[in-house]
Length: 317
Image (cartoon, rainbow, N blue to C red; front, side):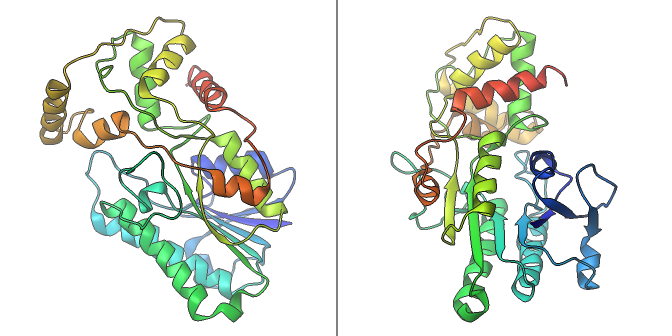
């Protein structure tokens, strides 16, 4: 079976290459095309316009512009990349012989905040900001195309995945920033914020994608995350344990922390309002729909096992 992975040089694309190259024939599509172990050939986006892409069985669309918590990115670029590239590769899928299209959207396309106990696929999308808005526009394009010409999708499967934050070896971003703080032994000042948050460990993600490729699962929108959430305070404790230190969690006044975050917005400091929200909000997501579709009761790794594996990999960075 042959697979085309867009954004193959990114964190998730590189992980899929390592996880799948012994089982599938893999091609890549990216803005750069260096040789990559496990990949037959990586094509440039301009090659698609020249009809140079090979026929494949499955397209996994990962390429996109990540959420910028510093708010320094031009809003237009999110739509050019997250929406525009999705439109191009989905049109290619429609006209190709590929049987499955797996699009990586985001839970942020559905909701910036979770109202109630947890987020399900039934929520009416209400993204906030260009990242989530560009992702939902991409979703809408896919769904509109299917509604307009259902006959073109006979025998095809289309999966729109909304993962929570994906982590694993090679992961960068907020998780890595937190780890560096824990590694210094500095006290964690946000202990007064009690929260629960869903995460996605890479091993569980690869397990699900492999199942979607190999099984005949109904097309649709699916949330994805580990089976149980973790709090930021739990994360800090796991990180401290990973580096052989004791966690020092301070319950600093919430109003003072919020003031510091607003100051960070102005001075472009590591702690700003958006990052504070991501670190302290409740954002619990249900993965019941995808598990029922795959007829499984639980994912291979628990939330703690997956996080510990990721944190242990940071020790070599």
